[in-house]
Image (cartoon, rainbow, N blue to C red; front, side, top):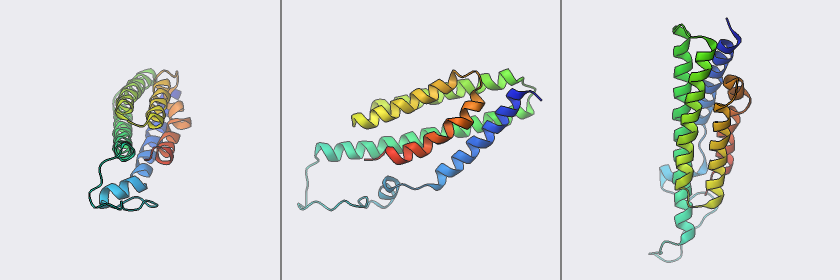
Length: 165
């Protein structure tokens, strides 16, 4: 069995674990979106009919964009894991497996970049653009499965920490 196939299998397992871990995490923005409550540390406005402020609009956009980035990464991770698992039943060379992984990563980077363009907050836009750039760099690696093990698995926790209103 070639090294590339071994790395592809390892990447599939790593991605699957990453997807499961992301699915188990619930951030304050997800809790607030689900319950309709304010995130911890915020208070209700004094007036009964507040007019939307730029800050509130930006915060709402940030929560929406961050949720969508999470969804895009989970969907992309599942696609990568499914394609990696499917490659085991097909008669693919290690290079063919790596090429498929590169295409999947490039597509995921494009999807993440599309969400960055939606972000109203410049800091959030930069964070998501940098995330897309990191994923795109993985698509150009000679050993993308090794990149997945070393780098990709750190992306979801970083977004969970930093992508918030």
